[in-house]
Amino acid sequence: MPAPKELDPSSSLPALYGTKLRKLRMRVGWTQKELAEKVFLSHSRIAQFELGKEMPSREVSEQLDELLGADGDLNDLWEYAQRFPPTDAFRQYKRYETRAVAMHKYQAHTVPGLLQTESYAREVMRHALPWCTPGEIEEKVAARLARRSVLLKEEPPLLWSVLDEAVIRRPVGGPSAMRAQLTYLLEAIQAPNVEMQVLPFAVGGHAAMGGSVTVLSFDNAPDIVYLEGGAVTGMVKDRRGVARHSHRYDRVQALALPPEASARWIEKAMEDFGACESI
Picture 1 (cartoon, rainbow, N blue to C red):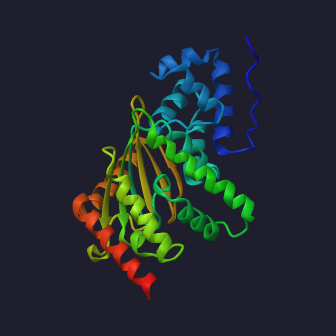
Picture 2 (cartoon, one colour; picture 1 turned 60 degrees about the vertical axis):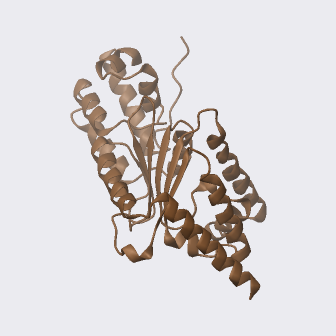
Picture 3 (cartoon, rainbow, N blue to C red; picture 1 turned 45 degrees about the vertical axis):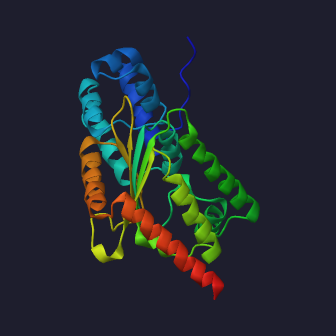
């Protein structure tokens, strides 16, 4: 049997949690498979927890803490990790994105990454990462465009996006670039797995004003939420937190224009940008 992979508990809070979990499991003499059976998870999920690649839900962490006699230590680490999400949260999100069967998004500021054109993505990166060299920006743009392949799978996920009106009105890259971007959106929603709604400014206040919200759903795993902006950025996996943020998304979606009316709003925005070009 190969030796367990060495962990660096100082690398991140999930790694610290995983190190503690492994020590507690080995102290009681259980294998990963034996522990997994006691919390009704697969052996591979326990391995991911111990490697610091994934954090359990709040409920599972509480079960692990009790089973392994952690006296609250695992629960304390879990709570701390939720308050201070890992800096590689987006890297984690991209891994989940490839496995999702449905993505429901509210976008406060930008077009969803999976639907960005090359010129739009480059302009977003240029402003968001002013410390990066042109070469680094191009690498990141290429990586973002490569993510679009998830929508071309034999069984692609549902992508349902609610776009704040600011997303289609702000001239990122100028009128010409925005016309190209909006054209791409109108082409994208012709696919049966892509839906889009616009949330007009006129609705006023709403539940997701703190930033963007993405709810990911899977075949054989609980939903998770990814937050961007506001006071909290990162992954939410505990059942209560996911339910609350899903409720926020549902309230925003209920305020948005229906898909057909939203397409007409996007077409009107394209016309407005065309008028800007002719001035």
